[in-house]
Structures are given as C-alpha cells and as structure tokens.
Length: 418
Image 1 (cartoon, rainbow, N blue to C red):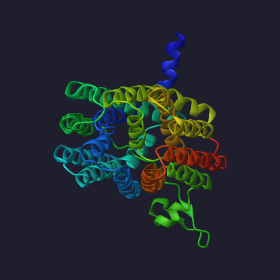
Image 2: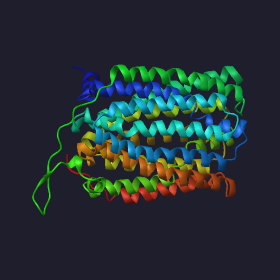
Image 3: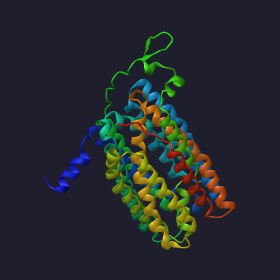
Image 4: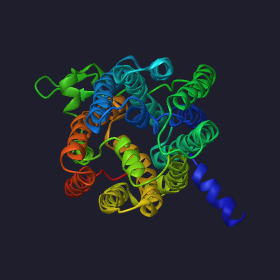
C-alpha cells in the first residue's frame, strides 16, 4: 500500500454511511446558502440603503433567535430519541424562508427571511451533530466531523463560484450589487435546497442508542433513568470542563460578529462584488482542505491545543482587517480566516461530543449553539455601532480582543482522557 493509500485509509477509518450522507446534505445546503450569504449584506447596503447598524441588528436578531431554537431542538432530540425528524424539518424551514428573498423590497422582509433561515438551522444543527456523533466511534469523531466540515465547505465553494458566475454575467465587475442580480441568486439558491431535502428523505437514518447507565440516588440508593431526570438535574451532569469551554466560546463569540462586516470591509477597501466572491471561493477552499486532516489530527493529539491555534488565527485575521489600508491585504486575510474556520468548526464539535454523555449529546450541542448564538446578537450590534460611531477598524479590534480573552479561558479546559 502506498503512502497516499495509507493516508486515505486513515482518514476514512470509522466513517459511516450516515456521516457521508449528512455530509452530502450539508454540501447541497451550503451551495444554496453560499449563493446568498455574502451578498445579503451588500443587498441591504447597496440596494435597500441600510446602515451598518441596521445590518448588525438584522444579523444579530437572526442568529439569536436561532440560538433559542438550537437549545430546545437539542433537548427535544435527546428526549424523543429521533434525530432525523428534526433534521429534515430544519432543512425544509430554511428552504421556505429563502424564497422570501425573491420578493424582498425593504430590510424588514430580509430580516424575516434571515430569521426563518436561522430558525431552520437552529432546528437541525444540534440533532444533526448528535446524529454524526451517534454514528461514529469515539476514536473517529475528529475524522467524522472533519469530513462533514470538508463536504459542507465544498458546497460553499460551489455555491460561491455559482454566485460569482451569475454576478459576472449579470453586472460584470461593478463595485455595488444590483437588485436584479440578487433576485437571480435567490432563485438559483432554491434548487440545491430542495435536492438536499430529497437526499434526507432517502438516505438519512436514526441510530439506535444504548440505554443510559442508571444513576443511584444517594438518599434512597434507587436506580434512576438518566434520560428521565429533570432538565436542570441533567444539565448538572455535564463535567466542569464542558461549562468552561462553553464560557470560553461565549466570550470568543462576543467579538465574532457576522461575516457581513468582513464583506462590507472588503468592499470598502476597494474589492468589487465579483472579486469578493472569487476571494470567498479561495477562503472556502482553504477551509475544506484544512478541516478533515486537522479533525483527524485532533483524534491523535487532542482537541484543545488545535482550538487554541484556531482562535489565535482569528485574532490575527481581525487585527489584519483593522490595520488594512487597501485591497491588497484582503485576499491573504480571507485565506487566514479560512484556516481558522477549518480548524475551529470540526475540532470544536468533536470536543463537545467528547465532553457529553451519549444520552445528553444533542442537549450539549444545543447548549453550546445557544450560548454562542446569543452572543452574536450583542456582537453584531456592537460591531455595527462601532463601525458607525468610531470607524471601520473598531469592530475588528474588538473581535481580536475577545478572541484573546477566550484563549485565556480555554487554558482552563481539561478534557477527559479518551
């Protein structure tokens, strides 16, 4: 067996059908989402004349509403023991919400569409991540989440490439986005979204979970089914390391405002809509290339130090956008940002799975997603206000500072031995 064959075999070891099919679903969904995600803030600013503060409010409300849904969806998934129903419902909700972009003529309509899309993401994310963990042995979780992230990001590359093609044909290299171009993108985004629903219906299946270990009540020494414990008691059964990681992630996310501000900053530095989308393609390629092997590496050397690397890359990226004086810096900063994403998304999810019992796994993902999602509301609002009242560099300095604070808390996370 050649070295490349051994490397492929190592990356595929422990990968199950559910992981691959869910990766395909995410690939199709990201084609749909990435056709729009980087042009929505440009549509708000260039066509609907929304200020950065309004854009921050739209993004913050959308993510924070989704945060509550993520928490409830994760707990519900653990209670009913059926992940696929919630996964399918979440993806379908996002497809329906995106259709509103076609008729959007004012920013409140865009807000409703963004909220609906994020609600769909909130419904599906925790059950989907728990289903990936349920379908994978503990020693292969990094590889599984890495593969899923790589397929997800491959869809992003395809989606942004299609967006760049549509923009190029519709309006050339114009700096500002045109309304008719945006509506063409919104129509194109519905096709892969519907295909993802078909794949879910055909190929995704629930995994029977082992019965939870009984817990002895100290006073009466009576076995109690852990899954039947009240929510508050179940939450107390998470280890301290889980809550420290949640706190560190919350502080980090407080400075992690919507990517809308990076898109607006790139445009302000002189990058056209078409060129921005081409840069985002390169960003997603880096993300996809990094995610899978780094996820596999985390199975060998542990998760925490790799997450620290990711947050350090984020701080450097945001400091770079704060100091950038022209369009030359935009591409290398986006590439650095892609490396952060590739490390953080796969390894962070694997660490959450490590820190939670199987019967509480979706709840754990829901808690993490809820905390980080809620932090995005003040993060995006603060970013918009800093942009309007202090200057374009201010949100990025704030984000870099929060990343450093998160790194300090991350040092106190002590994951269990696997």
